[in-house]
Image (tube, rainbow, N blue to C red; front, side, top):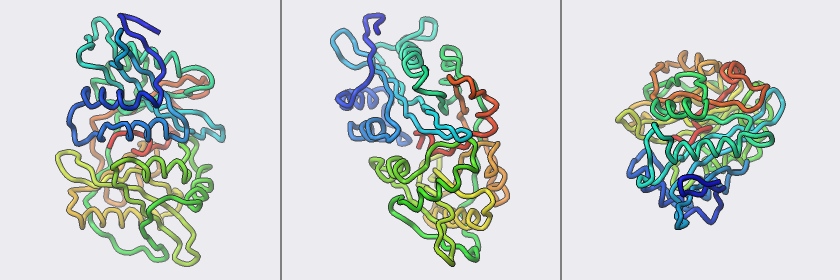
Length: 332
C-alpha cells in the first residue's frame, strides 16, 4: 500500500531496531514510557502469546518513518474465543507529520491498520485508552466509540488488619496453580482476556525493565490459591504511587479480596508511596467493592474506546460485561 510517496507494509521482527529508534524520536524522554529498545519491541510484539499485529510506513529511501502497533489478546466472550486488539505505539517521524485538515501519516496508518486487521479472522474488537486529543482523531477518522470516561480507584497505602483464614505471600512467577485459578474463575466473567500462566508471565515477569510484584492469597488450611494481584511503583499525578495492575479473585470471595488488597496497600505505604490506584470498569463488582475498602473514585484523563468488527459485539455488551484492568493496556 502506498501514498504520498510512502509505502505501508506489515511490520516484522527485523524492523525492531528501526521501530525503536523511531519511537524514541517521536515520543522523546518521558519517565512514564518504557525504554524504547529492540528488546522491548520484540518482547511486546514478537513475544506475545496471542501473536502480534503492526504496520510500518517507509519513505522512498526505505527508512521507517511511521509505526502503528497492535497487541492482540485472546478474549473469552460468553464461552467463545475472540481476538481483541489493543491499538498502541502509533507514531510518525516529526519530519513527515501533517495536520488534521489533510490527514497525515498517523491517520493513513490507522486507516490501513483497520483495513488490514479489522476483518473476519482477525480482530473482533479494536480498543484503546486514549487521552482526549487522540480520542478526537480516532473518533473522527476511525469510528471509535467511547465506552466510558475512565475512573481511578485510589486509596492511601495504609495497612489493614489480618484476615483470618487467608495467607498472603509473594511469588516470582506464575505457575499451573494460577492457570487453574483462571480456568476456575473465567466462567464468572462474561467477557475477559485470557489470564493463564503463559500470558501473565509474558505480560509481567518477562517485561524488560519492569519491576512488577506478584502477590498471592491462599487458603490457610489447604493452601488452595484463591486470588492474585500484580502491582508496581509508578509516577502518577505528580507522586510516587502503587499501581494495582491486575487482579483475579472470585467476586464472592470477600475474605481473599480483602486480604490481598490490604497487603498491597500496606506494601506501598511502607515504601513511601503517596497512594495505591486501581483501574477497572464501573460495571464490575470490584468497582463497588474497592470503594467499600476505602478507595475513592477520581477522574482519569483517559477514555475507554472500542470499535467492534463482529456483529455480536455491540457496545452495550462491552460496556456492561467486559472486565479489564491495566494489564489489558500498555500504559504504565
